[in-house]
Each structure stands twice: as C-alpha cells, then as structure tokens.
Image (cartoon, rainbow, N blue to C red; front, top):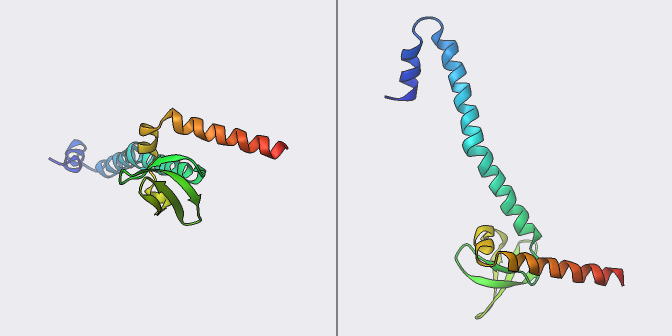
Amino acid sequence: MTILSIFLQAAPGGGSSSMMLIMMGVMFVGFYFLMIRPQQKKAKQEKNFQEALKVGTRVVLTSGLHGRIAQVQDDGFVIETLSGKLKFEKAAVSREFTEARFGDKAKAADKTTEKKEIETEKK
C-alpha cells in the first residue's frame, strides 16, 4: 500500500481533499527539513572550505590524491604531489577527506599561516 492510498482510505467523504492537502504539506515540510536543507548546508560548508584554502595547505582530493596547494587560481588549484605539480578544479578538493586525514594538523597549519600574515602586515 502506498501512503497516498492510506490517506485516501482514512478520511472518507468530503473532508478527504482538505485532509489530503494538509498531509501533503506536512510531507513536503518533512522532506525539506530531513533531505533538502541538510544537503544545502553541506554544499555551503564544502564551498566555504574550498574558498578558504590557501597556499601550503595539505589537502586530499575526492580521488584520494594527497598533496599541498602550490598555487590558488580562479578556476582551480595547482597541487604539489610527490610526482610533481598538477592542476585540479576547486571542486576536486574534499573537505571530509581532508579533515579525516589531517584534521587538527590542517587547521593548525592554517592558523600558523594566518599568524605569519598578520605579523607581516603589522611590520
């Protein structure tokens, strides 16, 4: 049985159309909060992570490649690996893989880089 047939059987007569509209509205709100909103939030976090990456940050790409950012360009990154420098799209850098692999080290490296930049700006 589908959910729609259950709703149709639950309210016989003239009141079924208004009850069905209410239930459809509740289902839409449920889908929004359980599926759409978390996906949008995750996409926003991923984009912010990719935009905040700087030269020298260690990253892991979605393909599993590990490297360090050598250059930041408008359309992507140049990643330095053991086999040389390779250019990748920004979307290829994975926030989840990077945080899982480097975790606090990546965040600490970013903070150290920020401190050096602030000290240089003060001079």
